[in-house]
Image (cartoon, rainbow, N blue to C red; front, side):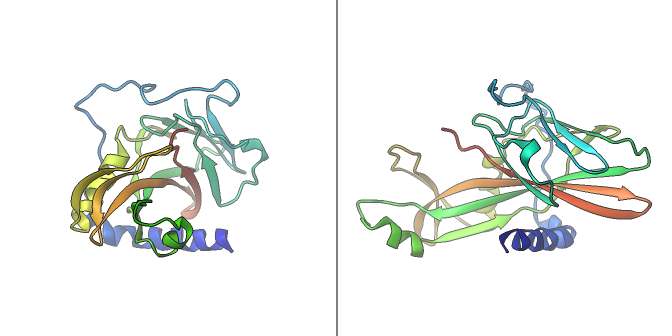
Length: 232
């Protein structure tokens, strides 16, 4: 049932992205800095350095990008969830598609799924579970935007810090005020905005990669749900 809900939501977003696109600034590669491809990346020898997913008609490979899933053991469905390895992310990652079918064409797009959640303050509420059921919470998706194509079936994820981009976007879109309330303990608990008159945290939870396959004017779509790394 949960997977069905996700597919319905993704289809809805896809259908409405063109209508909503005009309300959002287009993300472009950051050309003001010369960030190396590995600047935001750390490797772990226990996992493959590249993430490779084999579909029936093509294989998609994300270079220098690790996930915690055993990809070969996953059931390849229309929506595939991948959990980033700690320290890994998509900034500047090259995405290659390999296929024996020369007439297949591909479009790759991305969307951010972000959250705004009221900050927990144990000095005000000792019953966390009770508080959590009623906390202020907002969830959103950005419209899909195309990933830069370097050559035939070769793409590159934008050189952007999406967490900063999305937070600024939501502050402007929802007319939210800035704040800085650090109640961190064993985990980060830093409110950076005011939502419904209370300090709140912003986070990018997932990045959805949409792969449109075009064959003889017919389209099929696959999704990668990237669960973003939040550190240790």
